[in-house]
Image 1 (cartoon, rainbow, N blue to C red):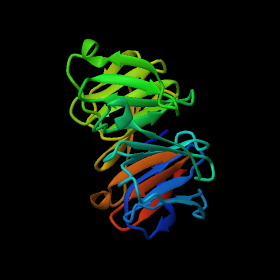
Image 2: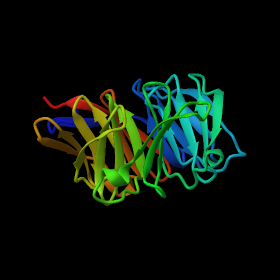
Image 3: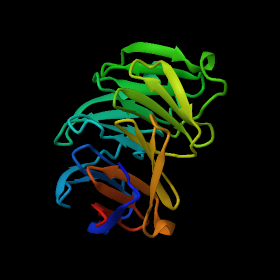
Image 4: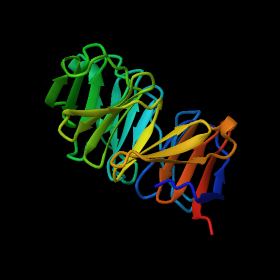
Length: 251
């Protein structure tokens, strides 16, 4: 994870204006251009995929934690698309058909299903590609305060909800609440007990077992919109480009 003794060196820079980006465990970069087209680049900076669906509104999030099953969410219309490893459409879902409206965030699950959180009812749900709901849990009976998460992600057999005001809520892989972290973040990653998040101007790495924390300063943080870490690479979305840095051990 992030270590204070690491330095950064620029590996690639993409001149692209984008509204969102994410990464996958293989080091691939997924960028949503301002025209709503989805581009994928590998860790060498080569373009490896393209997807565009103009009828479903604006892409609001992408979950690429499983690069064989990329989840694209069009939040304005409650539309979910599942893409394969070639970024071809496998299936689609319409949350309105389930009576779910204004869903802010969703998440892929290791069992091939999708997590959905309904803010209006405070309910966490899991469903399959046929829109069959297999799990529901009212978090109003579990949490002391209502949450309105900006992001949700399942990694390392844990599900996280990220609320920039209420902090980070951690659940197990079955959807049962475990603990909270009082960090003001809008996006997180989780690797082997390390909680990684960006808060200007630093990228933090918090060890949830030892409760220790390390950080590195992100270059040109004033023009930093998103930061992610994958496979010893740091990815930074800026206003007119995306930078990819190598993490190097200082000698």
